[in-house]
Image (cartoon, rainbow, N blue to C red):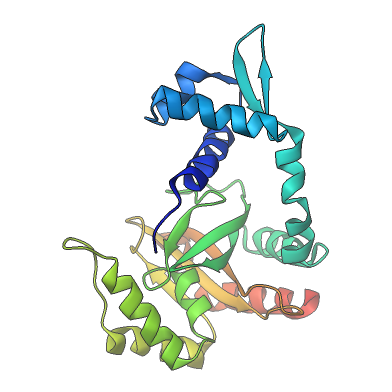
Length: 244
């Protein structure tokens, strides 16, 4: 699919400010995004003209307006079903003592949309917005499991077509072997797939009123998690049943 460059750049700018979390000058934005100065100033002025960007003439710095925050404010209530999903994640994190995430399907990937950290140290900390492969992550495979076999086959073909010469390629048979195991067990445990020494147990959260499919994952070092898999699954499924 051909990308509209100007549209992509708008979101690159907004995501840039989400990372830096402070006002920036035209020179800084242009340099950090490796965007030509002329294109950058045109884009910033366009955003300013429709009230999605502010400009301070004293400091010469730009900052997204409050209107950007309001743009997607309704999504939180829609996706998280009036707090139920967040309550599940918080309860599971509290009972297991391990960091818990919520992920949803975004194209060919699973994307983290909620994270509840605990005091236990983690070898990695998946941040909100981070994406993982649907075919090679616990949350991704759990999201795929309820889908039809035809859908999964198309996803395998799509991922392989975008892998390039050095990218990871998958076979439909190997993916379905994992999917069928998840369908039987109703959970998946994956270790050493994303970060060496780390694992994650994931279970599906039934969709609510047509909302996006969600997966709950509990992540921890392998030596803390692998002997507790069944316990973690029971806690997660109990809290899901209680709140959904």
